[in-house]
Length: 301
Image 1 (tube, rainbow, N blue to C red):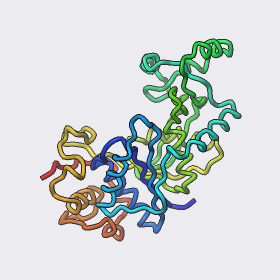
Image 2: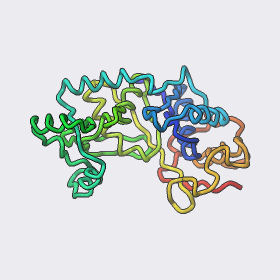
Image 3: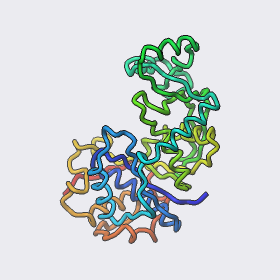
Image 4: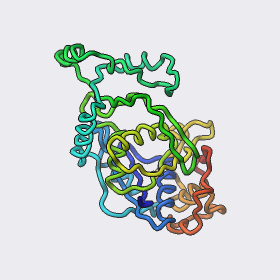
């Protein structure tokens, strides 16, 4: 498989500097290997996604010199692919309706999980008999679709975080409002776009076993993964509005200085005197120098 990479933001607000740093690292991974870089807009949720946020995100990427190859792909235009994948999983008897409310799921998730991760779904609706399922369907109660994972343990090598493993619980592949789940869409999109190496934030590493399992069930080639530790505030918490100027527009020093600051957090531009464009960083980028721990981004000057 190729080493092509991608950045795939959700257009639900402006990109904060942690997301821009992840985009920069993903872009450098691809460009330093002479690979293509794709931009995908993950706008599955029509209630939260906005075109104005999408445009603002692309403007911020361009301001840092992060470019992409080919047309921008939007998940909202690819629903047929996701439905075809659901049909394939149905043919394998791998999905079932889940009628649990959020409150019921929270209560069940608070119970001991054994070998499963915290918050794992215990399979409540998987154990329903066929008559019980039909009776619930007749009430008109909305239901999600879950994948029957059979508790499979997935192991994978992460280029940044090292060896990873996780036991997969039964997870949602289509929400009760009809929206296809992120876990399903992302593996289909990555493979369909020829992404050979997925570089993204470390907050998504726990989702990776689910996506690998889906890829295997659907007969898809699974990409390699590299999860980038997050940017945090000086309190050690994930970067958020309470930490001050956390978007490119809010920073007073301008894109060149912000780019230098982001580059410094991954072992580049050590003098932090300013970097006009991301392309200046490609020659000196070394994936082995990307920090394995979260980094603190100082507040705006």
